[in-house]
Image (cartoon, rainbow, N blue to C red; front, side, top):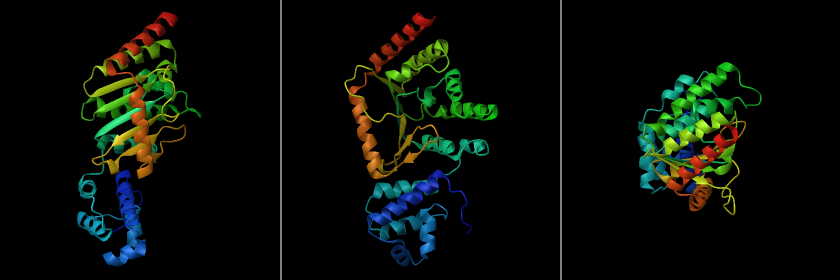
Length: 287
């Protein structure tokens, strides 16, 4: 069977979990190859996502690695069985792979949590607000790229607006007040946030300035929950990409961050009132 030239995110994640399984057992690639009666090259290719892994092979690897985590093994088996393509593939010729990966993670997530400190979460942005954020890119985005990103972002929002995936957005007051394209765009965006906060599948909680210590990192991040905790993923928003983290230590650290943020964020009702008050202030000052 020909090797995959560009493994998808889920194929790479499956391979990474197989590698973690092997390394946890203290096995080298050659040792596992002997136990499976395959070549060391095939072990490497499976762990890189370049060679397909059947459910039967997955179970052989788990047994050889003495993995007793049944829930993880079954979740990985489901990954093997499920279709790997999605709506985001239509953008494969116009957008970077890391953006497609973000959409794939969100689509398969059981729950999504975000922490936003510099700009409001993309899954809740209005078209005008998103356009103003894209317009600040350095170097500037060509018009066609900006249009593609806009359409892509609006499609991504269906994950939470459909109610299919529970969503919790922790938003720092700084993000509520940051203006990218004038007070009207911000006021409209804040009004949309209030409306979204009434959606039973969307929880919006504000972290006000008067919290004694700023919880967590200084960048926006997204925490997506998989079918089991071991398959959770963290995505960091930076200027030049969307790096993903999925090691047990990274996941543990960001779970702690989310717990810390949740402990100081305002409850949903108070957060809704807080957003209304910021919107009123923006309108009063600039209206």
